[in-house]
Amino acid sequence: MNASTPASLVVAVAQLNPTVGDIAGNLELARSARAEAARQGADLVLYTELFIAGYPPEDLVLKPAFVTACEEAVDALIADTADGGPAIAIGTPLARPSGLHNGLVIADAGRMIAERLKIDLPNYGEFDEKRVFQPGREIQGPVGLRGVRIGFPICEDIWGDLGICETLAESGAELLLVPNGSPYYRGKVEVRQQVVVRQVVESGLPILYANQLGGQDELVFDGASFALQADRTLAFQAPQFEAGVFITRWEPHGEVWRCVEGTTSPIPHTDEADYSACMLGLRDYVDKNGFRDVVLGLSGGIDSAICAALAVDALGSDRVRTLMMPYRYTSRDSLKDAEDCARALGIRHDIVTIADPVEGFSNTLAQLFEGTAEGVTEENLQSRTRGTILMAVSNKFGSMVVTTGNKSEMSVGYATLYGDMNGGFNPIKDLYKMQVYALSRWRNTTLPKGALGPTGEVIPTNIIDKAPSAELRPDQTDQDSLPPYPVLDDILECLVEGEMGVDAIVARGHDRELVHRIEHLLYIAEYKRRQAAPGVKITRKNFGRDRRYPITNRFRDRS
Image 1: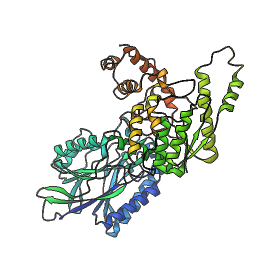
Image 2 (image 1 turned 90 degrees about the vertical axis):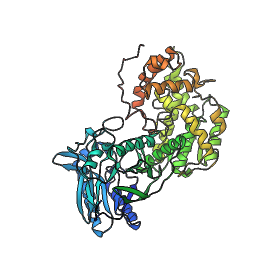
Image 3 (image 1 turned 30 degrees about the vertical axis):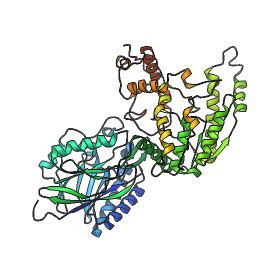
Image 4 (image 1 turned 45 degrees about the vertical axis):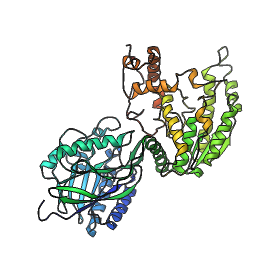
């Protein structure tokens, strides 16, 4: 510190919900946030990673016109800073002689004073930035901004082991501000804080971590921006799953800057966080893609019931419509349970019998199927009829179909292509069956923050308590062809999330023959999952971006 060191630095964290490709809309969001920050006396607004483009933009950045439009929007925001208000640090793709970069522009007083290029490009799980960006070639030093020397590592730059934060400290940085696009999975807040703790220890500097908010296809960005002091204590915690412009005030204390003002919002527990992620992901998918409302089949089962609750919580009851499509195997309980659920949620509920179309298909196929026994083919005609009806309603009224299969079913192929898999988005795609039960019980006791649905029991207790069944044949239950869900889910978590071998799974107490069978089902259902609707990522390894297995695959663990 020296005589020119300011008495304080006020940094506004713009924890906002940009939309990929909506450059004009993202610019307006940025301007609105800067105006709010100015009203609160901010010196600097810190936006999130690639904010002006939306994150992740994927192959959009390979279009020169897109990159040019992003840079023009940033230039307009730079010009805004000539008004004497807050400086900005905003993420944008940057086309430079060295290639296309994931960049950050820092501007004040009407001019760009620095730019920084992301060095450590992630290429794992949901990230494939090496596909479209070139890494920054060297660690660039701190930026002098309003009397403070600030380091600006970008997201993955603090996750890896390149020593970027330590190098910034050695080159004179007094404070590290980090723009991020870090998507949600269960327990991610703790993971981020551990990463930042390690960098605080190595650099000796306080770190402010700004994270994006909002749903983008299968990813949900949960915000939860935070700051740690140089002594690793939590100084600032923005709320999770809420947009806002959050003020942090920093003051020099001896040779160390300390955050002396900043909100400390509680982080929701696991069930609330998972439910909120599913709700936000569905809301943003529907709204950002321009759908007025949604429709789904409400069968009287738990999966469709929680999806209906999520849809109402995300969109409001007036934007949700359900269909009950009974056939001869549909029980009276299921009819009543579906009606009770719709009534509790306050949504339109129609009953459309499917006997005529199912029998029509059966009659049409009778000659082709002559001499064969009835079985799964005939059962699937029911599911495919329901799927056709839902898609017809979607086509007629412009409603997006919400599909309702859970991760347990999607893992083992307990789902019908062009039937119950029909739909535009699946909010519970990454929830195992037992997690669906847990969230259903939780939702019956709690109205999540930001939810538009009613309080109280919205998923009838009978739906939660009864044995799950597809009701495609007499007296059918899921356990006719699958092990009990607690057993199935544990085996699947070992195979999918843990990539564990058969011996290790058997050592947990599971039957070896059953483990081999579930592994086989997991592999042969890959072709179905490739054709499934996108859905919210909740676990560390969702089907799609995180787990990319070949469809044609003869490998089996023979241990």
